[in-house]
Image (cartoon, rainbow, N blue to C red; front, side):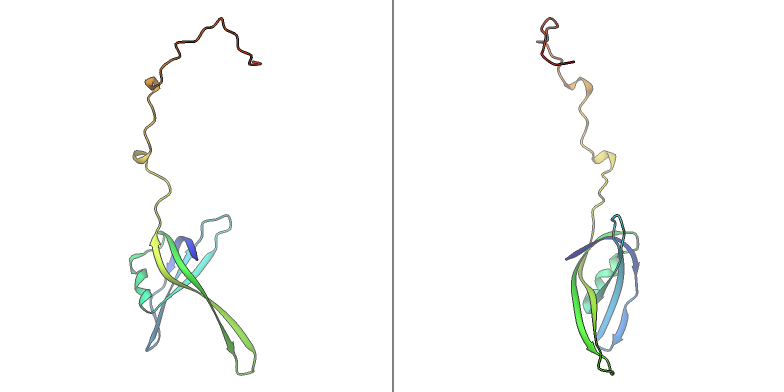
Length: 125
């Protein structure tokens, strides 16, 4: 799965335990109702965020993770995580004027030479 949008926030690395670290990024989607999606990168994947900054347009490859937890009172709780495993910069959609294909010159089209005004066509106007 993928999430595309603009980077809103990149948090610093959090060392959760001696053997586990994570880093979170918030990506704001660009749709009618923008969503602020928090995606977590873990372990060696935290370094992938070093080359990104807020405002950049990105595509993040994600996995949805879910887990079950039973609290001390015996109640079962469920938690979801959006885990990123790849991130890449998106191309800018609007091309600069120099990258647009050239427009044909006005004199590039030959005028019709076989036109006869005396001929009537059957068009209603």
